[in-house]
View (spheres, each protein chain N blue to C red):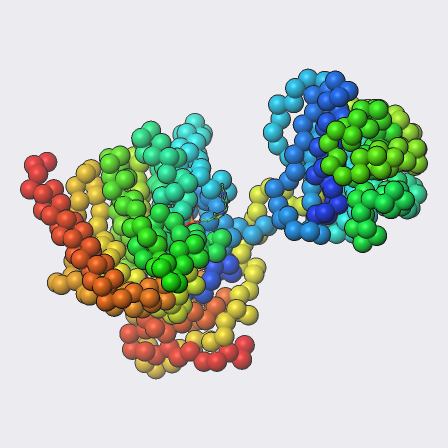
Length: 301
Length: 284
Ligand SMILES: Cc1ncc(C[n+]2csc(CCOP(=O)(O)OP(=O)(O)O)c2C)c(N)n1
Ligand code: SF4
Ligand code: SF4
Ligand code: SF4
Ligand SMILES: [Mg+2]
């Protein structure tokens, strides 16, 4: 066997109930590899409760706390306080919530957890809609995407509003660590998880989680699509440590977003103008990211 | 405090029964509480509802795992639902059934009571033979068997809160009251002595400990990956990207598919650099 580039330990069991090719399932598998067995995961209502906890089974070798949809941030503050009282200082306390559970209904609990400076890791696995309940739009659904609540027909052209900038919202709370992760880049993914693991304070991971049935692409393309998301600049990979931003994957030139959009049924109705609009937005936010990185680098320590 | 758990099916009026009982208790000067279990609410699906009755305001906000009284509106549930789970010793099981109370199964020490509420409901034209509305007849029986509410308060609650056929429903409650069959009719429940052990509901308890690996997901796939090892470079990409952890290594370090778990997503084949994994139409 060649040398493994990510940890060999498996803390997620097989036999779970995710759809074939689920990016969210791979995200959990990679996350736990990096965190290790001294971990407690708090799960709100989302695909993962159905994937991992049909009673009496569990898909994780670590403890799971099932909590209400909106309560992830509060639950990990409580878990951390309890662990501290019990003297369990070496335990990773992790909230693992969907984009709906994070950017919409769970936003105040997340904000509270960050503001209290809870020493825990909050993960948002982002499949860009409420998938568990049948593909309803969330604050993280991108502009123009088809969902069952943002249909495409006649005057209706998918989601009219743009995607919410969760990293921006989180960074405004000055977390100890925040990063974007993509299972299509497992080594970068693992390095960030291990880095987050070893930092004390509130930490936030935004994980890209392609969803074959929700985004309408073939289950074999989850990784290829993930790569396209990053290489087109739609989902750039970066981390922010103590307020300093560093881009962790730079490609010479960004690929055209068209490649990413055309690979998914949820964007099939896009006109060339729609594609151009997305392209301009992606370009602009990429430029802003590069600019911010440059400024942070030149800032004295 | 007396805790009462209702089991019925969607459409039979179990939720309304728990509310009517609480209203009646209120008219008797008690402090009641009532709410349904949040679950599937399809017609015919099992439904659970709860009522608590106390002399002081009820502060508990949980479901009732250890009821003093279990009320079953549909005898068909006895075969599919463990209705007496967690019932307290010296509690009461009341079932809508034409059978005698002695024929009912209940844990040792639990009193049994039977009332033919279906027959009563139909005699007053409540509901249809397929779906009789039995809740008021059952409540009449409950009033007699437990004494937790008076028939008078129950009748007034029905008058005020039952939207349709209040007169017939009051008569049904009266008939339930007079025809319920149990050993010690009217005896108040003996409260559980302080510190007495509370029986746990059966099952494994609230913590799920069975690994999902006991579930085989092989049947999910329509295509099965086959690795042609002669071209395999042992790069581990297939292993790295499998969302089901369905790839392991043989002693030589070659990847091997764990066929019990592979869902056939095709990621390994798509990501294999030398393209040495083939997706074959599944014949298990
Ligand atoms: C308070 C509350 N409202 C609604 C629901 C129903 N519900 C369960 S999962 C879910 C969607 C979750 O979406 P997201 O957080 O994006 O996770 P995903 O299912 O996409 O993984 C909803 C609406 C609930 N469980 N609790
Ligand atoms: S719906 Fe999407 S996110 Fe949910 S289990 Fe299926 S692939 Fe995963
Ligand atoms: S087809 Fe999918 S589930 Fe099966 S081994 Fe390959 S990656 Fe894993
Ligand atoms: S991806 Fe292909 S070459 Fe690499 S280990 Fe798997 S089968 Fe072998
Ligand atoms: Mg989601």
